Image (cartoon, rainbow, N blue to C red; front, side, top):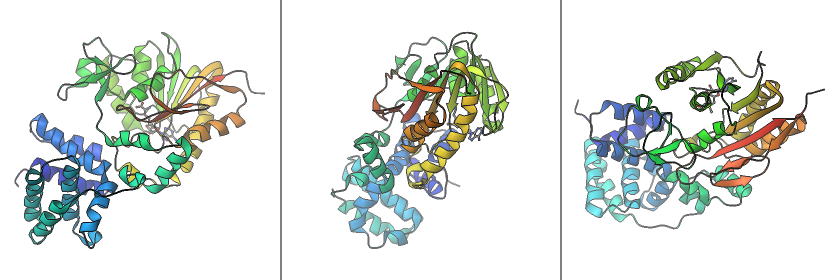
Length: 398
Ligand SMILES: C[S@@+](CC[C@H](N)C(=O)[O-])C[C@H]1O[C@@H](n2cnc3c(N)ncnc32)[C@H](O)[C@@H]1O
């Protein structure tokens, strides 16, 4: 079989996302296999992420030119969206239209004429803000209600630098917080260089624990261990818990390559732990609404009831984390989500049930969206959206 072109590969990946695949995973796997120059790989990434991030707007722009878009074969719909995306990026006429017409001729010859006509006719069209931001109405309106504006979501539709956390000194462009850097070269073997790809907003959750050498830290819902690596690098004795053994095994391999020591224990954390510590991090599972840049398709898959359902699980996990926190100790709760339910909602309910915990102020060096009991990080300048709550256990329970 003939190897696909970058455009053909982007189209194939978008069809897989439509069948339920995850764009980041699909792109990583596909681009690892092709022996193409970095420029061509970057073009595929630009097309796949760009179309998914702007999908609602692209369909809105195409709508007046199509009689029954839903009846079109999926390949042709995605070809039209890809062409419309390149129009949105300002690519000039011929270079923008003819490659997509060729793609249509290869896959669906009878509709190549339609692709040609529609892509040539495209023009600007007024769009409501939620459509312009390509957000589902329920999420867009929830954000507008809670944060007072939703323009920040534009940050999810722009590409971001590749942030890395450095575990040995290297001469790189600094990121927004200590130990965070921007990787500007081609894809590299990061562990061999002592680097770990990580968004600064994720790193900052671990920094909130202010780990000291020799101190015991429990890393709850540690997964493949991004935050555990930072804690271990600062000399803490880290015990990382998660229910997913595969993720932990991947974490253990990376820790070895980075020369870091982390103890892994596999457990469902809705069940209490048999140990405690003076510092506890709960990086809870969440809707991921702060990560719509790297996971653009998520916005179309989430349901309005998801944040509430996640909050119930987060509160159950916080119970375990609270019991595992020693008197006088610190408990940090973090989620890569920007919903009220999973952030301030969880914080309010938890503090009503646990008067022995007090929220502590967070001096956040990252841009924020809203501060209350905890802090919401704005998804600007390539940052993921996050919510952090730092709690101190002030006395023992009666
Ligand atoms: C946000 S991710 C953790 C990311 C990780 N802390 C990091 O920095 O790389 C949430 C994790 O919660 C874990 N998880 C979900 N439900 C759980 C449960 N009931 N008990 C234990 N772990 C759970 C998932 O396996 C997942 O690894």
